[in-house]
Image 1 (cartoon, rainbow, N blue to C red):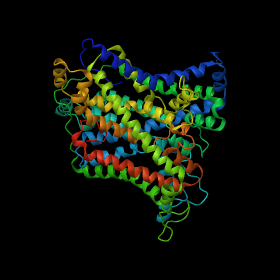
Image 2: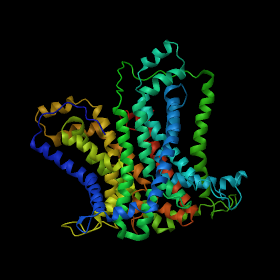
Image 3: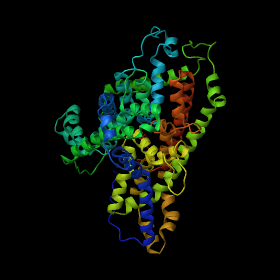
Image 4: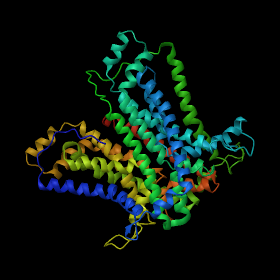
Length: 571
């Protein structure tokens, strides 16, 4: 939850109160109404309470098998993410390694790349038809089963996908670690490992627990990786079970998939509740005059540690996406890559010949761009009240705004279908099977992504100028337009770009909401791979990675003008 630390403000004029109520209505429509509709569908049928759908779903063996598989992969992926992300965070934050900024950028990059693209990249570099392995003479014999089509493969990719998430959460805490604690431990004669075990790890419990909870919720709701690896391997988790039920039987099973969505949402919420319980059991408050621990000097170990860190980037980032790029250059999957077979025909096909792909590029750019812009416009006034006012309703808005992002995306998708399946009251039109339902889901899903950087920007502003204008009689809208917006615009722009990056390659939500003419890039990549056209899927994926990389590099260049903490990969 985004904290509201500003002192209580006097009772606002009626216009400001009306503005607050309008923002509350927007947040409620985006975040609360769909989830209430989901709950209603699960417990009410034919206008009266009924447990028929719940009984049918919960008595099916497939439900519990999918739940067990979801827990296995989510717990396993979380453990791996914590081990990898936590270890790297300690090395990067507490040692004197060089080129720290470049390494952080590369390590965080996989988090900005869609999970289905990551899965496809690994499949193209480990399979029997891998152009990279064939060039190296290391390709396994034809007919060999790809080891990634398994529970262990899903766990491995989930762990690697969300290790940067744990890294960012823990590193944020380590950067504010009191320097005097480390110095006191070393002065008392303790070695670096003892200081790490007895001081650093206990003090860093809150960000570590938060990272564990974020990784678990992300793993339990991930659709792209289990879809690419689990469906061919006949290993079903709850998100893929919902997708298969809805795509195979249509809206007639909405009550049943609503129960499945509530089940996966309940599992995610249990993870969040456990996190809150663990943090409430102990007091982790610390007082320090000098935040930012002095890095440990590695001495002769610095070069080997740096080689190990950059080798991990080579293995986790460069190699799989090199394999993806090489796959995009062969004329057909399984054809060896050489000077005679290399072609750009796959790129020409997806860019100029395949109508659905062209629509998907346009739809993804428009949807993610429009959602990012509108979210920024909502978040500037919303964060103004969240940070500089303190009321019960505003504290509740914090929680409500985060709910769609904290819950798995498939839950929001089913809720949107239920909300818009029938024509809207008064308007008489239905958003179901249109691009507008995806747009609504993006607004609800990514609202908090745009809100967090703006809140961070407000916390770093001196409010004196705005208060002086208020004393002089300037109204709220005038103050926002002439004073507040120019000051928080960089943070809002950064939040909008982060929203764009996340929505641009999104699949978890749009996989259940797309229709003919309303395809997104994630859906097209998934459809090509499921249809056996891996070279086309690889070409689209390479293009999306290039777009993501270009936007991140542009943000990195402009980082000096942005408030600290806005860009997650900024050193």
